[in-house]
Length: 304
Length: 190
Picture 1 (tube, chains in turn yellow, purple):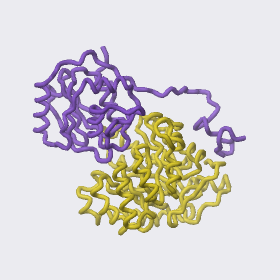
Picture 2 (cartoon, chains in turn blue, purple; picture 1 turned 120 degrees about the horizontal axis):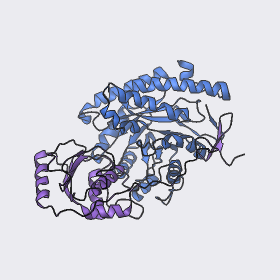
Picture 3 (tube, rainbow over the protein chains, first blue to last red; picture 1 turned 45 degrees about the horizontal axis):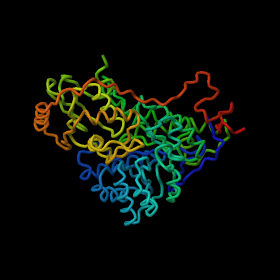
């Protein structure tokens, strides 16, 4: 549908290409595991967790839609076993989703100790970053980072650009220069999903703006907007409404050129990946027919 | 008369004369409507807290906030609202002493935040899930009720000043130009 005059960087995650002009590479789908309430006793249900990862991998092979695993780490006590689990069951790069700065610091130190920094995408570098975390990122630098454009002070698209570019009114320096100075190689920009009523659509509008401004792989996790929609709790015919709407909302940023999607709980892979294969086929045909783009070899455009 | 609990959210309401509000964090408890004015979960350490502030200020009879239930992991919303009441805000809107992920108050005025801090006292039952224990705390608050804080206070949501341009000469965003051929570039580029 669109292409960008600004050069679009691509990164190669051990064989998975991410970024570039819309339609050329399939969308990277990231499924999250170990969310709160996903398992009753996550530590004891690692076999089930491994099965879900295996299923996502099989679906990636079947659909030519690449995927990564995102592992939620809430507390310091979970770091060791969750990282061990990831290294045992995941070939290649994985994302670690860590809401708290103190946990992110401990994780970076642990990854350095065991020599696994090269495997990890730090999710995320955001406004909550502390001086100590910045110092740790400089010393123990992960391979990649999700740079989150969340700006509670100014949550329109410009505010989201500001927090990444120069920190806006809330930080002395932007998150992107912080990441670059730390030496993080793979830089992924997240437009920061917000709830309805909190400028939710700006997370879509920011996709082309980020790609034009920074030329870096851009994506988002709009399933969070779906989950914060209170009306769905009252809706009578729930069925698998959340899974369906999660998959559906992910189509919108991709139309505008998004390169990756955090699609929510990994259980939803069987819906999310074929759905994205359909969207990527459309996008690839458009890019090929209209812009003469050369579509990548591994793509549902060719295989499905 | 000003509106009671003007900011929408996930909450239940009881007797507005009661001095007690209860934040149940990640849990879902029910309370005696004659004893508790308003209660409900609170997920986030920024937008969630803003809703609590606005709704509590609309009812000056509320003088106690009981913070109970299991903490919201990652967000630490329970610890954060208690830190707010205890310490207030830094200049850029960050909640002092919060251990939460992104603890910022940005959509509500400093005046409203300060009034909230004066109006209420918190009761720290973080992690407590025994309804019996929480109910006892409710009783203790009712016994200690210092009376209304005065007139209701309406906390307006701070909206960014943005002009809606119905006949804008841009699509998507003012920084972007889309050519008739679908090429996206910066507005200033020729």
